[in-house]
Image (tube, rainbow, N blue to C red):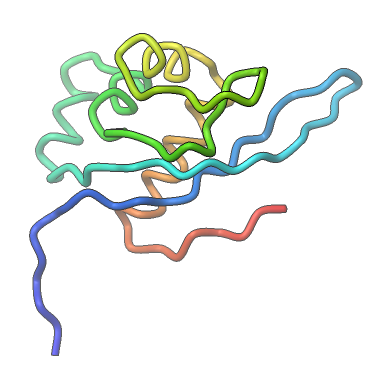
Amino acid sequence: MFKVEKPKEITWPVTVSIPRDGGNTVKAIFTGKFRILPATEFNAIYSSGGNDEDLVRNVLTGWNTDLCDESGTPLEYNDENLNMIAATPYIRTAIVSAYLELSHGKKATAKN
């Protein structure tokens, strides 16, 4: 039996490829908390001139203590930190990719 569920908040792994000197990257994972948008809201973000930063601000509702600052202190979920990570291209790309996976019902990809 398939039961249609109302969209809810979902925790999901976000795999970030952090750029390093010499053309290398290091992968790191944090757990994001996401709100699944109805298609009309998702489409409205982009059709009204919005971008991926706007999507991140609309779907990322929090994160676990595995998202930390440079000293290893967990980042508090607040507007300032949300804006900072949404404005960082490689973090933003990872969040959008994770959101598209979960919102399309795809299993999280194992990225090492």
